[in-house]
Each structure stands twice: as C-alpha cells, then as structure tokens.
Length: 164
Image (tube, rainbow, N blue to C red):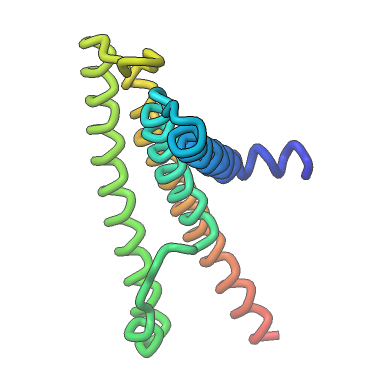
C-alpha cells in the first residue's frame, strides 16, 4: 500500500486499528477474567475509546465508498433531472447535519478540556476520546462533496460519450 493510498484512507486505517485493538483487548479481558482470574481493570476505558474512533472514522470511510444504507429504488424510477436535484438536496442536507454535529462536537471538546475530565485508570482525556466526532464529520463532509462532484463528472462524461 503506497503512502498516498494510506493518506487517502487514513480514516479507514484508524478505524481498522481501533477495531483490532478493540478485539485484542476484549479477548484479552475475557482470558484474564476467566482463565487467570484477574480482570483487566483498564479494558473498559480502551474499549470506549476504540469504539468511538472505530465508529466515527468507519462512518467517514463508508461515506467515501458509498457503503451507507440507502433506499434508492424510488429515486431511480424518476427522470434524470429530478434524480440530480434529489442528489443535490441530499448533499445539502447531509452537509448541514454534519456541520451541526461538528459544531456541537467542538463544543463538547471545549467543555471536556475546560473540565479537565479524564478516565479513572489510564487517565485518557475525554476530549481526546471525543475528538473522533468533529474530525470524522470534517472527513465525511469532504467525502460527500467529493463523491457528489465525481458522480456529476462521470455523468457528464457518459453523456458526452453517448453524443459522440
């Protein structure tokens, strides 16, 4: 995998690493609790962080690859011009919602930083755990806009190819 490929898929790489750490810590916690009789008291804190980062950065990657659930059967039956308008409306609503989430995520980060809250055992700052929300919102906005632009370019290229 090239460096540019990793940078383009940084959210996916973060989500994959978080998932792997989550699996290892969870499995290790089970082994320690039931086989050794000594639970990993810090496991829940790591699991919380991994779950947050995996969920939000995975959502960013899903935006880029078009992997979110969508029911398009009705829209596909409409004329192409109406489909384009619905896609534009969908993009606008998506960006507005993600901007709202990002703004509130930044507020939460500020509040957590001001309060100085951290986890009890590992002392991971809660602002760091919650940093996944605004960062992934920015990535999702960029991915949604890029996918929309790319789809429009492909449609134009296909229309030109049909004319020729």
